[in-house]
Length: 208
Image 1 (cartoon, rainbow, N blue to C red):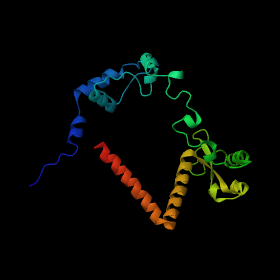
Image 2: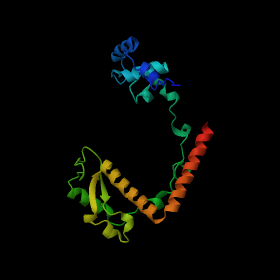
Image 3: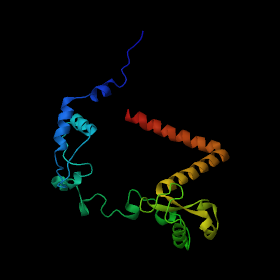
Image 4: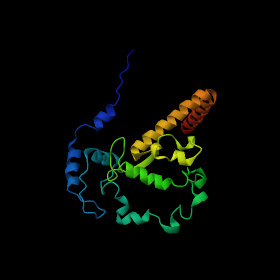
């Protein structure tokens, strides 16, 4: 016996052309943001459809909610703020402070400036400039593999990268470290993954 499967039927019905959505779109195009910035809302059809499904009218541009006059009711400052006074170890995102940070040793800032000057403050992968993206200095060979910080911070081991290319290179190094760890001790890596999956399954069953 065959059963009819209607995958995405509800979504298709929601995304069909509707005169109500077009009317709201014309209405909001000529409406100004209520935060007082002086800009028109000019929303997309998706924003109009979402506002209709949530039964809420569009009042402000994205990110302008905190500029509304009534925002003072939910914006807490000073001693009323839940994070007031929670610095250092009192912070919920505390990671141990300076002891866990990588110290590149004496003279690092000077070598960093020399590297940026040598590369003209330009990413050596995508060639974005400092005016277009933040430029970082990356160690070709990871700093932790050296015993001497002078050799690690040598100009030949440093390269200028934008923050996006820097993240990609760091991800490659971390992925390589994981592969090396898997080759050295596969049992420990597999057992840790099994334990992580077991905890995730427990959380999923608890939610249901």
